[in-house]
Image (cartoon, rainbow, N blue to C red; front, side):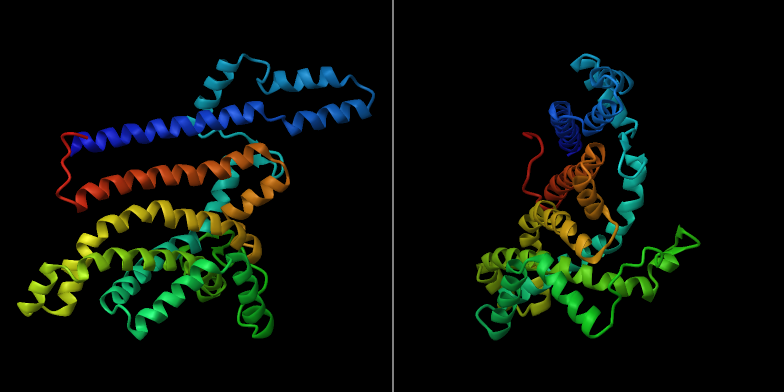
Length: 332
């Protein structure tokens, strides 16, 4: 098993290098808007735009050979020197560090709660197949998958913010801080939690639905199996049958979607949700960077989810072999 985990760690490193290389090539081929702006300003002031471009490229190391720029890029990535954000006038790593906590405040609870609720509803729906509860759960699942997150967020904001006045329309960035610093007491305060309920609820609709449908499909393979009938004949309680004889074997394939589907839903959904609710998190930062054509910041906001996905897939592979004792590690 140790050798298997070691090889998975190596593959995670290779995947990270591939992503970084592709990112570098794309940035190398993309015209730098900052240099184009300098050329325009030089032309307006009567200076030579070509000289201004060469001076800017020399200052940024862009006049070096391709392989030298690539090596510098990789060294900067490893040392967390991810460039300068022109739109925010600060290092990219600082902009990410200030935005990520806002995304985690509602993203992490949404993933945990949606995973638990999705599995519980999926198991209930499988054990009670074709009952009224199963139909209601199926309807809720299709509703969550089908409804657009941004539209649902706007509707909830209109109802609970404008009509009922239960939540503020503007996100208070200082509600989670005390004297300008992050504080756990402020994060869990009702004032901060109240403004995170709607974003969490919207984010959970799709992830709960996805988890519920997948759990139901996997659990149905074991509900009518012979060993379940044997357990019932021996008088094993319903709760024990569901927990040990249905959920345990079904949890192995379920674990495979935790990263691919759930993280994808969370990160993709967070872009529109944060824009609608005005949360200054990673999604809003990426949207603002794209609109401002801030290439360095766009790269940083895109790379963070990719890196999380790589780490998540690594954890998924390790969890897979732990959950399924039939997997042999020698031939992997």
